[in-house]
Length: 451
Ligand SMILES: OC[C@H]1NNC[C@@H](O)[C@@H]1O
Ligand SMILES: [Ca+2]
Image (tube, rainbow, N blue to C red; front, side):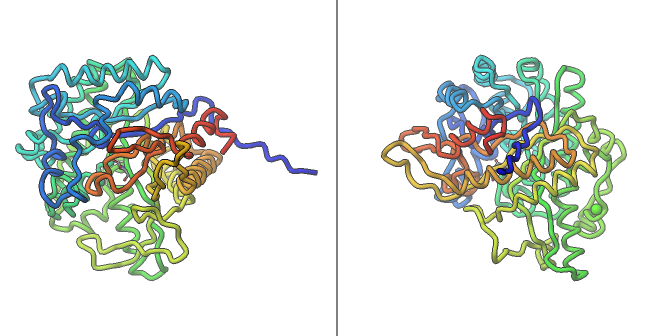
């Protein structure tokens, strides 16, 4: 007798979508009165990006936004996560509002709503106005007020049409990449600046949530990239390194935001005298009620003790592992483990997977207009199955945004890494849904049953 396993479905109202970010897809960074961001500045600094790639054109979404929304509708997306470029709205970062910049996002939101696609708006996805970086940027405590001012402009303009707001995208990457290792804008390399930037990001997050509670009537949350750390061996050194790496990447942001304190490893085992003593009112500002959290998941890290600075921990490449083009191990079980960990530690807050996806080498568009990307399809299938496992273990997962809708600017890696379920020909700007997009459309239409 054939065993028919009824496919486990996703919860009613599960939000199926795709994610992008302003600087990675829009192009035209200085159009219509916009001011430069730190990424416009950084990418135009020789040597900072692969091939000197910049966001000057990207996917030309600033001009092609209407066709891109039509593309989302053709794929059957129920939601679209995007970010707003702060310096289009406030060219100097604070004060004067650039109405044309605001109009771009207002038109985009109206088009999404007209197609029945729910907008999820991220206020900060790394493109800080250069004018604010000139005033210290994330190292200046005043940035909490600057960010709340920017958020308030957006809340007043769009709240109601936008009902799910995100303050920050991945504060860990902003600080680890932008202030410790210097691979990302603004390209600093300081163990002393890193905790200050990190803390001010979280203060700004808190200030923006507080401002939302005054102005907004819907939901706001925080998006973090977290990555489960598995000890390479049971040695004391590797176990301690794994605990440090876990505190530094996974606990450093959700702990203050939800629990009101930092993991002790940050001061005691990682930053030492570089860790300032923060005032109590800072913790009170950071810890604001969240309506949801967003988790961006890509990979795990098998961790060992190393002499890396200042973490003294590093990843061990897995001999039998499968790796993506960005060098990340494909490990879907890590997503299940991580979601259960977050549920247990933070109290099962409504959670969206706000990014998940992979860069694999894709063949060029075939003559019949197909892009065969079986590895990406397999990656998405495995991770959606891992999410369903977490839901079966009681995790309150409300939606999934694949990273990314389009091939786009992968920051310092330029256009060399393709994460899109839709192929972009950067010469012609032609969009071609890959096999993974067609597969994802079926998954959405079948409410996950076809996975
Ligand atoms: O590296 C892939 C993605 N990760 N999260 C942030 C996004 O901006 C990246 O493109
Ligand atoms: Ca801990």
